[in-house]
Image (cartoon, rainbow, N blue to C red):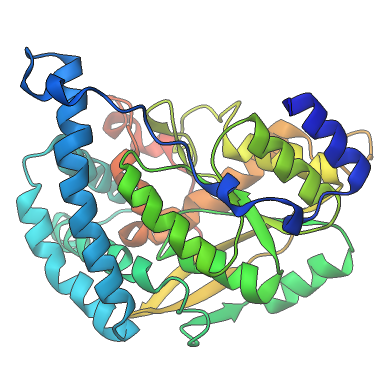
Length: 364
């Protein structure tokens, strides 16, 4: 069936989640390179072959083994394990480009909120340890909500949004163990919940993610036109709420928070606004904040009011993007030690010279 025929069928039949094969949430795997290229001349083909046949399978085997083992252990032990092994990971990767980028970004962003040199060093150590917890806790993402490790703050804001009777679009940043937030919204707060996601480069990691989400029967779709059609129709029909993280990596960069850079003109933030307008929905910002070990507050913020100048109860693009940044930039700065995307952010070379101009004022 062509995508246009599929779109027409979805429109006429009233698409339901149970109509969609769950396998559509699994991203396509890369083409298989020739194994002979492993021993071929240096170049892109040999690099790709070695990655496909050696590096990714070895990493995948280790990751799968650790994931399955940790999934069977208590959440507090798993969180502590991630914390305890983080210093080793930092030592292992200290000379890698991404580790140097993390350090530069952390120092630059914390300078904008007035931290001393010692506070920066201590904070950077905590960043690695918190991210270590997050990576380990991924194996418990289906359990943290069910076992009471997430406490909802701002429930009155969710109730206010629900009273409007429109589809809900939850937007957030990668703070804390964000996969557990997917579970909380999907199983408890606004069930069922769908959304897009960004596949990992390693096909074995994607298989882990796929199995985890299949166990809780949550449809999170990989990029593509087919997925966009699914999200649009399901949201518009009221079959599900939508959860989307707007600090994704696109074109080798994290575009939100802006930190003084131009606001994006595409990406997840724009998708969230367009889907909200197409479905007549309500945008609800939220974020996770770590309290102790695997315990989090799930902070639900007031729903965004439509801001279209023509009073159509729609969200105009630029004002809403600015609202996203005004909300989340101070939150990320206040929780910088828990922000996973720090290593993917590429600040401009002159950022440190313009600290006073680049960042929004910190919330008091």
